Image (tube, rainbow, N blue to C red; front, side):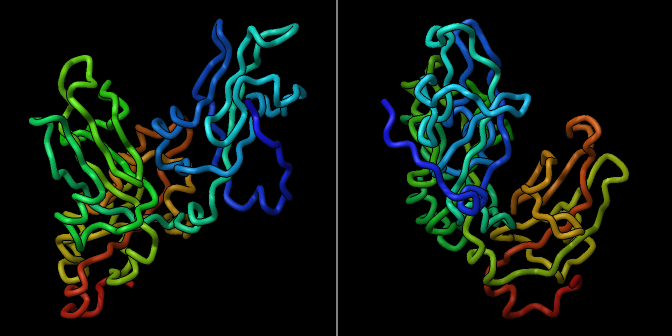
Length: 302
């Protein structure tokens, strides 16, 4: 069932767009690019609550079929084309992109916390709720996170564990229940949050660029920055931001990051990038507890 179909102005639709996503191939059933699947696979690059969606074939051609010919075509559920619904042909291979609320793009210089693990799966499961994290780490977590990232304490992304999750969103947090798993038990998880930029503006360091991508990649790790600039950064940052030395926010590049959090710092590895897309040259800065700014000397790096 479809509600009203609106056409918006070009200025509005360009306001905050994601890139194109094509996770599903055409099968005997059809092609689907569902929002829940895309958020699970590309959590950093899609907002929680998109306001619009576009679909086109992977060749770049917008479908000439009416919207009602698709099983799903909206920003709430995503896109689905079912072969059996087509009158004279099977579905083509489609890709989709979303329009997000302006706040999603306004934090393109993203503000990420460190990793937190406030529970383990020894009881009913592993529950990392925003409420509990705020109680346990009140100075290290924002009240209104924009995105949440989860991985096992060993560093395996949640989407690759095979577990199913009761919740995985910025409203409640993360919860994996043992009884919901085919194996009978959840992995032990930790979470990291992306916060509004004002959370990262209280006590900032200068920008650090201690490496370049000419070797294995660009490594701007907290440990090495502390070695080279011990008075310029705190040992327990609350947040981290990264951008290229040319000023492009990290998530607006096409690079994939091995590490990007306030606990370890930042790392882009050339071998993990798409073909002919080596790492850019990056710089990072950290948000520290307020007392660091009250007592420190001027930062070592401007």
